[in-house]
Length: 230
Length: 296
Image (cartoon, rainbow over all chains, first blue to last red):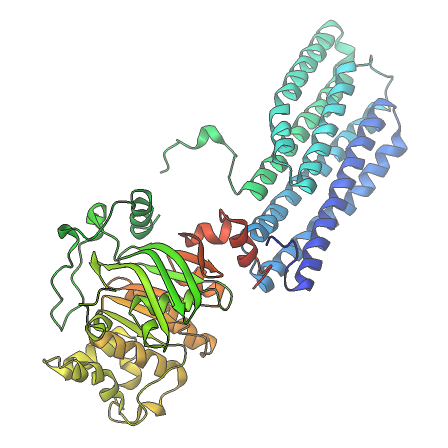
C-alpha cells in the first residue's frame, strides 16, 4: 500500500517538473565548474567568458525554482515527505546559485592569469577541482536517488578536500616566498583554489539537505547543538 | 514541546502499566458553575492521561470496524483523528461516549478509561457518561423549536442540573465565543443564527453541562472559512479546560488545531504522535502517503 503517485495527478506533474528544474540547474552548475577549471588549467579565455555568460541561466533557474516552490506551498500545502522535498528545494537552489558564482570567480581568475605568462603547473589544483566536481556530482546523485549513504559520503569527503586545499595553500605560499615576481599570479591561483574549497562546502550543504529530505533528521552543525541560546 | 506533548510522550513511553487502580479514580465532579478543576501545567509530571483506550474493537453487525486500538489522550490537549472515509475514526469517536452502541447491531469491546474509570462497564450509565464526554456534530443541530437561551440550557434541564441557569447560559456562550453576537437575541429562535453561530451554539450547549471531554465530529466541515477559523480559535481556547478529540477530513485543520494526531486506516490506528511530527516526518510510510495525498 505504498503508492508513489498522488491522487491528484497534476500535483505529481508539478513535483516532477520541480525535480527536473533542480536537476537542470545542478547540471548547469556541474558544467560551469568544469568549464571554469578547464579555462584556468588550459588557459582558455573564451571558455571562461562562456562560464560567465552561462551563469545567468543558473541565476534565472534559481528565481524560477523559488517561484515554483512558493506556488506549491501556497496552493498545495504540502506535508511530510512533500514538505521536506519543497523546503529542501528552496534551500539547495541557494547553494547551487552560489556554486555558480564561485565558478564565475574562478573564470575571472582564469581571465586574469591568461594575460600573464603561465605559472608552474599545480597538480593538486587539478585534484582539488576533480574532487570538488565529484562532490557536487555525488550530492546531486544522492538527491535524485534519495540515497542517504551517498549523501553521507559527500559529508565525510570534505575532510580530504580541506586537507588538499591546505597542502596547495602551503605550496603556493612557498612558491611566492621563493620568487616575489609570481605573487600576483600565485595569489590568483590561491584564490581559485579557495573557491574550489568553498564549492566543496556547498556540496556538503546539499548533501545535508538530502539527508533531511529523506530521513527528516537535521544533521547540520552537530557540534553547535549544545550551545545555550540567549 | 508543549506540556501536553511532553505528557503524552511520557505517557506513551511508560504507558503499559495497567490503569484502573484506586489511584486513578476520577477527581471529584466539578461543581456546575466553573470549569472542571485541573492541576497546573507545572504538575504535568504527575498527570495521568485523560482517556486511555486499550484494545478497543467495534463492530457493526459482523463487520469489524475498529480492530483493536490503543491510544492515550493527555488532559487539556487536542487530539485529531484523521484518515480516509471508512477508516474507523468516527467509530472511534463515537465509542468514546458510547454513542456507537446506539446503532442497531453495533457493539464495542476493550478497555476505555476516563481518568482511570472504566467507561464500557455495565454499571456505567451512558447518559451520565455523556455529560462527562460531550459531543459536537458535523452539521449544526440546534433544537429548532427552542430559543438560543433554551438551546444552551437544554442539557441542564435534561440532566436536572440546578443552579442559576441564566448565569450558566451567559458563561457558556462566552466560552463558546458567541455571547457578543447573540446577547441581544437570546429569546429568538436558534435557527435565525448563521451556520457558524449555530455550530458555536451547539458547542455552548455541549459545554453547559460541564463535560470533561469534548468530542467533535467534523465540527467545521459545513462552515465557511471565517466561521471555521472561529471554531478553530475556540478549540484553542477550550483546551485550557477541556480535553478535545476531533475527527476531521481536513488535514490542514488537524495540523492547525491539534497537539497530537492519530492516523486511522482500515480500522487500525496506524500511527499517533505529535502533530508536528505527523505532518513533517511521520514514522510510517502509510501515514506519509496519506498526509501527502497519495491515497484516500
